[in-house]
Structure formats: structure tokens, C-alpha cells
Image (tube, rainbow, N blue to C red):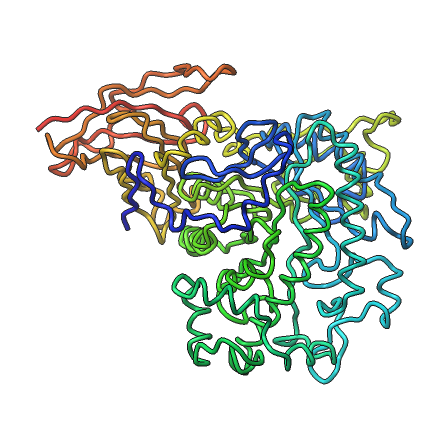
Length: 598
């Protein structure tokens, strides 16, 4: 496959930003916001573009303030600049109308102390498709706060989208949360907010409660039909096919317009979830208009995840129903088999809608690093956030790192181990970050990306940036960038049976001029082929590794040549045999100038 990026030429799938996106930019420019800058939409924090390099503690971890503080220390030590913090509805409104924001305040205070930004995750009506973060007074009053019903009348642990009481209660709590943040967060720690989490219904293709049945039998809302007709030629192909199969009807019941069966049901649920989430987001933005997004399980295909989530084939429904939602962000978890292809597929599916791209929940390790490099370089993502799937100490123990015995007693869960450690009143310091963790793939990736973040943000806007991700199933890629084709491949010994040691190669490339490139990544071999008229062979006239200092000046750490730049002594007729080896450490960031000869 060949990816083409020409200097100064737009190549993204869809650059038009829908009218709804304009609502993100607040009247006060000091408020964090998304802004269209050249060919990219970027996160603007304190008036400057900001690249999110984040991590998400385990789901319930933020409710333990000592653990949360420890996570912030870990974030800083491993080159993160952002932490994704969950806030459960039941954490702030345990009793109806009585709000307690101590967890929010601690998250903001600690983030300011450690120089971090915060992506706030609102676990309101739904988390993992269920309503387990709804407060007790909501859960216990099923008559006032009804649940969805699935096959044979079974009630699901899932608040119904069709209840006005449900969304109003959620919206009131969320508005109170955003109002509080506006009042206390003077240093703009909170820059982005997720509204709900992994929504959708399981166990059936739609809600079959009496309220849902009445809505299903009613006419499809005119505002949805108007939107679809206006955008008919640019709808997602899979969704357009469903509408076409039912005759492209412009009015009628949901079954008449979109057909009976699971696909039509999914469209129906997508609209109703979108309208619900939009009402909650709207209430929050009235108080504090930072960008807001909805996330998804990242499934592929009809019926493959919770029904109604903002999966790519119903983005048209969500864009029509939730104009207050600025992005639809997929979770990103991969098996090792074919991970590079999965990364390319997922990011492409979620950038074809014309909205900014961000990954809020994803794995770490090489696959996470590969996703981050590719999404930021090739898809102009505003950032990447990895997920700590288990408690942090278990996260460490899985890698063979031993923490002090005082916090690793048998039978203690990961949060309990930290009770009494750290914090201003504690006599027991938090255990230090094990030195080995610095060498982990995502830590190294963020170290590299944070150093070149200003350059990345600049080149995202003018189209002079590209990215690749490779593995055994996807071992080579050709990228047209500027005046050359960059031939990217895995180092010798990586492919085939030895692939376990270096399972992925990934990098991003920036064209600094007609014959000059800035290159960053890991486990990659790069050669160059001219792509404009002139001598057919490209050689390296200048080759150096280095980093940028605090003032943005390039500092050379090593001049590279000879054995260190030789790729092969028997090159193809159109190549010189010299090239670039990218690997974390001193050679993670390199700069080359090319010359041509015949």
C-alpha cells in the first residue's frame, strides 16, 4: 500500500467541519477548545495547540485520592501530559440534590501541582452500557426512573433513553459538575469531557419497553429525515445501504423508513441515545463549553457491539441527533495478530466523518505506541490516551517489577495497598516508580512524541506529516511525502519467527523542506526514492540523531554514517543502500538531508 502526502496538499478523507462543530469554540478564547487550523483540527489550551499524551487510571481508582495522586506521579515520570479521570454520578450526588465535589477538586488540584491536564470522563446514566454509576436514589425508583426492557419483558440494568426523568436528572447533575469546574478550575486543567461511557443496549437489538415501542411506531422525526436528505450523497455506505433497501423513504415509521430487523433497530437506538446524550452535553456546555465527546467500544459492523453506540456506520445519525458532541472516539484494544491492520482500519473508519480524532481508552505496550504514532502522524489525531486495565500495582507486577513489601502484602487489592501512603498528612511516602518502567514502549513513545510535539502540531496544519504502523502481517509501507517516497520496513530479524522481540514498527515523518525530513519512531528501517523529475537515486547528505531543547532548538546528539546508516550493500537499482534505522533511545528522533544522483 502507498500512502500519499504532498507538501501543502490536503489528503484527509473529509476536511469539511459540520456546522455543529462551530459550537465548540467558546466566546471566551481562554477556555480550552477545538480549533480548525489549516488542514487539522487541534486542541487549544491556554491559547496554544496542545497534543494530548494521556493515561487513564482504572475505572474506580479516582475515588481513592491517594491512589489518584500516585497515578499523577506515575504520569509525569512516564512522560504523560494528561490524565483521564472518571467521575461517577453516584460519587457527586449520592443524595438527590446534594453535591459533593471533593474528588473533582482533588483531581484538579493534583493535576495543577504536577503540571498535567485532565480529560474528564462522566460516568452518568451509562458505563459499559449499564447504569451502575447512577446514584442509589435513581436505581431504587424504577417507576420514576425506568429501565430499558429487552426480550420477553426483562428489565435491563440500563436506564431507558425514552424517559424524560432520566435525562433531566443526569443533565442536572452534569450541569452542576461543569458549573463547579468553571468556578474552581482557574488554571484550565480540565480541557475535554467525555459524556457517558460505552453506551448502548445489550441482550436485544433495541429497547422494547412500552415507551420505546410507542416511539418506534411513531413517525421518524422530521429533523432527522431533513438531515439525511441534505447529506444523502455523503452518507456512510453501510448506513446508506440500509436506507436504500427500505426504498429511501422520506417519511414513515422507523420500520417503514429503515426496515424491520436488527439494522433498523440499531438506527432507532442510535438516534435516541444521541438525543439523550445531546441533552446532557447541552446542559453541561451552558455552564462551561469545553469540547465534549462520546466514546464507543470500537466494534466493527452491524450488531457487533452495544446497539445504539456511536459506531462509524451510524455517525450520520449521531451527527444529526447530537450536534453538541464534538467527536466520536473509539476504544482501541487489539490482539497481537494483525494489530497494525486493525489500527489502520479503526483510525480510518473514525476519521471519515470529518470530525477531529482522539483515542481516549486504549492499551499500552507496543500496540498502544504504534496506534499513537499512526493516529497522530497519519490521521492528525489530537492525542492518545492509554488505559490501565487493572490496578497500577498489578499493572506493574504483570511486568515483573517488584514494589516494596510494605505495599505488596498477600491478599490486598491494588487500591488497599496504597491506603495510608502519600498525601499531605501521610508519614509513609508513596513507593517510587520502578526504574524499569521508563523503558516500557508507551513511556518511550510519549518521551519521543512530547519532545517533537510542537513540530507535530505545526506539520499537522499544513499536511507535511505522515505515519506508519507495521507488524509481521503488514511488514512494509510506502509513503509519498514531499518530493520523495519513504520506504518503511521492519528491521532484519524482526519478521518471521523472530518477530516476538520487536512485534511492531511505527513512526511519523515530517517534510521540513524539499529534501529534508524529521523522522521519529521505533523498529523501523527507512529508505528514500525520488518522486519528482531528476536524478533517480537518493542518498543521505546529512544524517543526525538528536532532540529539541526547551526553546525548540535542534540539538545534535550523534552524527550518523558508515555502518550506522548502511541498510544493504546490494541495493536495488533505484536506491543507494543507505537509510535510517529508527529505534527508541538516542536514535528515536533523526533528521536527514537528501541529495540525488544517477
